Length: 111
Image: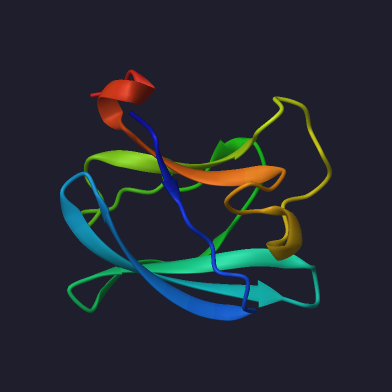
């Protein structure tokens, strides 16, 4: 079952979340130059991937070979199924136009 990742409303914030049985720290930041949301993801204080740009309606980690993130992917998805402009801090998160979701490899149909 997909897990929704909460996104704090501050322009720079950090959360801890368990995905696929592994604890991760995710640091979110808003880039005012391009009005985009980015994140860095860590496990046990080791950077798994930095500078991930939150792009609407697509996979965010699958294109990378990440030893520290072996069991799934994070996707930014529109709640309505329609493209609703770019995913920004103001419209991405719990109850907003876009959500950030973790899906396992099994849910994605990949091995």
